[in-house]
Length: 130
Image 1 (cartoon, rainbow, N blue to C red):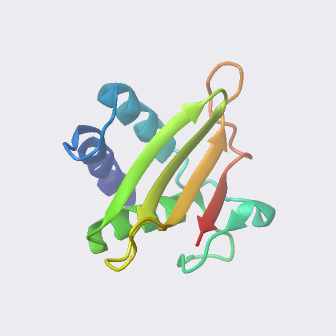
Image 2: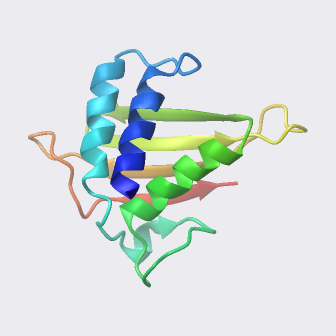
């Protein structure tokens, strides 16, 4: 069910008029590929996010994706971003409070690609920026 919900969210994310995505089909394909790693654990030394419920003691890519989707559904002012630069990709969401003019908190799900553009399953990290 989580994978189905994330797939729908990926389609909505890629086709959203409020999101300036240059190549929506490519972004949708990359996010759909990312969802396949939902059960992949994130190493404790790479996990720096707060308030993400975990069904086990190990945080997973799926936990972080679910938190990004939940934030999108429950927060009025936010901005999603997905980008790859060289061999590093990140999916993020900004949470701006109504009284904030520019400084917003952000959550990043970051990962690396190998030489064949495959996701390195050991490279996932979650980072909160206050």
